[in-house]
Each structure stands twice: as structure tokens, then as C-alpha cells.
Image 1 (tube, rainbow, N blue to C red):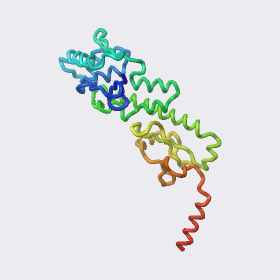
Image 2 (cartoon, rainbow, N blue to C red):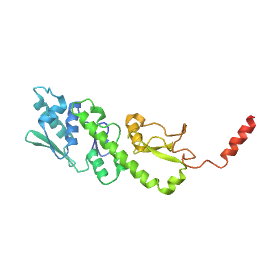
Image 3 (cartoon, one colour):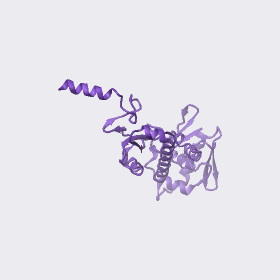
Length: 247
């Protein structure tokens, strides 16, 4: 069983998703999955569900949600265990995508960690009381993975030889949303343009998803000429011949 939080909440068994029931029931599952293997108190669940003013029936409603989730999830190595006035989700160590992402980062595999994002974390539960803090934490995790992936990429690609071949261009990291990309891409800018620190700042302010450009000309991976390669030796001749014709 695979519990996915790095995008809309989803639980998959085999090749298909599992119906998780009403919204508040999904909130309970998300909170338990974020603390998989640890007990989450009923008071904390109530605060995450209703904020500072839970209904008088909060305890009974939480028990009902947990009971329904047990019927949906129990089996295949997954259990929801009640401990005192709290509940614990027990499943395989890699059964939650957040846990996998954290372990991949610990294992210095940031690009593999980024591949787990399917969009904004907890996207379908973002306006629930528990979500804001958790979303911030998961976005910080994604940014950390993107920065590590960028550093890893530069360390691999930008050797001294490759820097010489770039002919005066420097790499600037740009981070696209994980829904359309599984790691950092890079923008070529003329040397002397914004530093890496500024690149990261601009990425956090909404650069994600922009098309890389070289001096105003769009460039994609499908382009016949990468932006750091020297122009074709015939390019100048073609340009001169066009100028002569125009004259």
C-alpha cells in the first residue's frame, strides 16, 4: 500500500487508488500518515480537523472516522492502532511518500526524491486547519531537494573542461513545479548576471515553469544547438549572404 501526500492525498493498492470517504475522514488519514509509526492524540486530531473550536461531538466523530478508515485500509500490512486516547498508523517503512523522500535525501539521491512530488503537497486538503504548517514543511523539503539536486548536477556536469566549453556562460538554477518536472532545470545567462543566491530567491518568487532563454531566444532540450555550444561555423556566412541579398 502506498500513501501519497506529495500532491493530493491518495492511497494506492496495486494499480488503483482506494476510495477514502468524506473530506474530514481523509484529514484524519493524512495526519496519521504524516506521523506514521507514532501515536497522534485525539486532541491533536480534533485541532487539525476543526481548529480551536471543535464540536462537542469531536471525540465520537474521530472514533467514527478511524473506524471507517480501518475497514478501508486494514490488511496488506496496514493497521490503525488505538493507544489510549490516540491513534497510530502502522505500515511498511516506505509506505508513505514523505518518508521515502526524506530517506532518499539522507541517501544523497535528491533527484529521485523530487520525482515523488505530484504537485502541491496536500493540495486537496490545503484549507484544513492542520495543513498550513505541514505544507510549509513539505515545501521546504522540496526546496532542499531541488538545491541538493542542483549542486549535484553542477558537480557532475560543470567540470573545468565543460566550463571552458560554455564560452562565457554560467548556470543559474531554476526550479519548475514537480507536477511537470522531476528535478531542477537550468537557465543559461551571460556571466555577471544574478548569482546563485539570487537565482534561488527568484525561483521562490515564481520563476518556476519559465522557459529557459539565451539572450531572449527560447531554448529547450529539443533544440538542435545547446546554448553553451559554439555557433555553427557556417552561421556567420549565412548571415552575411542574407545581408548582401538585402542590400
